[in-house]
Amino acid sequence: MPLIGLFLYFPEDKSEYLPAAITMGVFTILAIFAFRYIVKLSKKEQGQVDDLIKQANEKKDSE
View 1 (tube, helix red, strand yellow):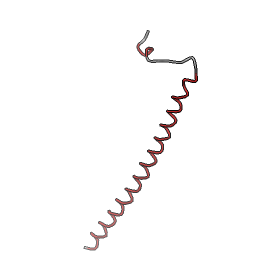
View 2 (cartoon, rainbow, N blue to C red; view 1 turned 90 degrees about the horizontal axis):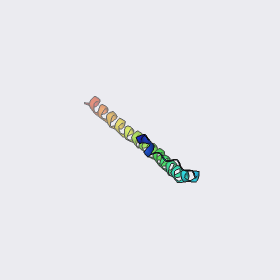
View 3 (cartoon, helix red, strand yellow; view 1 turned 90 degrees about the vertical axis):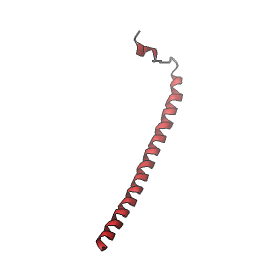
View 4 (cartoon, rainbow, N blue to C red; view 1 turned 180 degrees about the vertical axis):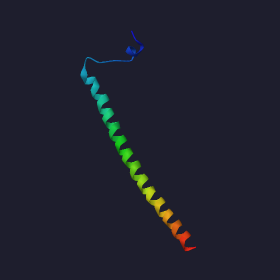
């Protein structure tokens, strides 16, 4: 028996897959929301950096 065969388990009763599917769905949805939040936060910070660069350039040009 190969070593990987020790870790595989395929239940006869397919209803045992339901809790795993629900858990995977919940974590997938949470991961999508987390990713979207990080992208949104990154765009906000990029706007702040662009404003700081603009201010620095204006200050440099006025000198």
